[in-house]
Length: 424
Ligand code: PMP
Image (cartoon, rainbow, N blue to C red):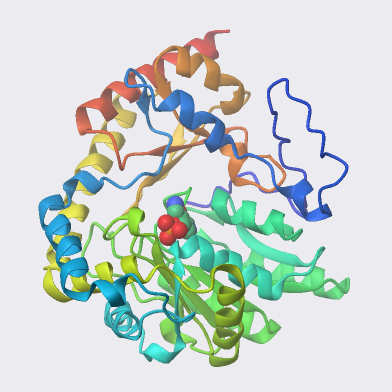
């Protein structure tokens, strides 16, 4: 499929300003310049509404942690305090627990990555890794390349460091290498500083698409030639529905890629354990940045995750998650196929949590949201996934949390809203 989604070029902090009710902010003229880029995402405003029980939320990306053996996790945590309390409740190293870093290397081996524990930094979710990497590379006005659309939490981080985000076009095979090359060429020719390419190559958030194998090679080649660091964000890589995990970009370019991983989707986000795997010099900077941010990660949750990996059948648990999400993906795709009016199109994810839907010409997902919530269904408007708030013909639908029947009911409600919009 060759159709491209809406992409805007050269954008900076033009994201939708936050509204703060009727309260006036007395400190408005005292914030640092970087705080002007800190605006509430559309997802945040939505959460309050979407969490009402009568609303079917196809909005949030919350993993279905209920599928974990919670009693086992409970025993494991109690056992940790009883047996290793003084260690688990103490400060730890800025780089992270050495044994956990070894275990992380074992996890990454499943994606073809051959790395040593010394190159891993444990972070507070991969979100903190994103923050640290941006902190050490980005000066105000520097350019960060990112897929269009891209992960809303990354856009928030880039905006907080006053980066200028330039989106690269993608289609249902992921990032388009020709667009990447052309954009890099144009930016470099005009003397602009590109600090890195941020990409989610596998089961992308929000688009649900995966960079194909040929393009993986091309993207790496283009970035190597242009001297551009790649930040590969891969929280969903293990949640593929068809077979073995894909080979990570990092597996083929240890010097040019910083890899970000997370236990949020393969175990639970509540532990807040993620990591960065980086070339040695960058890794050293990351540890210093980590220490200046939080001294050290929580030893307690690191050891809990380590204990889980050491004593529980975690590969089997990931399979359980995959089956569960596959069933939900099928429920969503099946319902879209049956119920959506003509003119709507959507991606068909082979893993992860998300489907990206494109509405018929003339419709605006953001404008439609109040009616949808009125009809008790929620989604995330596409505008949150572009740095300049474009993407209004798109929406993200997530299937990770609601049960299949609720997903079908949500799609039925949403189709009704879209049909009504088409009539008016
Ligand atoms: N990257 C992507 C693409 C994500 O979707 C998320 C979470 N939704 C994160 C990073 C951050 O995840 P965490 O901090 O929980 O590891």
